[in-house]
Image (cartoon, rainbow, N blue to C red; front, side, top):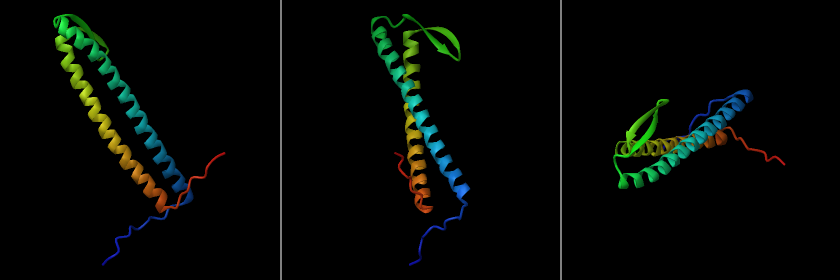
Length: 123
């Protein structure tokens, strides 16, 4: 049976520090984006809850929607499906970003193991 051990490319201490910092930055950026998108999805849900009540009362009721920086007049029955589609798209994006985060985190852990990096606790 052949060994399937991966060959580790030797890096200088500076290169290891740079790559370590890059992993941390990437993980932080993805986590921040996930947080932003989750907040946006929550806002969509809040608006949808309000408009769903209006949809039942009067589907032709006027409402206003901001599209690309322009406030547009629409009816509730036109806006609700678009908001639902947007919210669903945001949820899909969050799932994709969460998968990317997990993969990046695994790569980071592998990197730390390969180069025997231990985080020293700060007091």
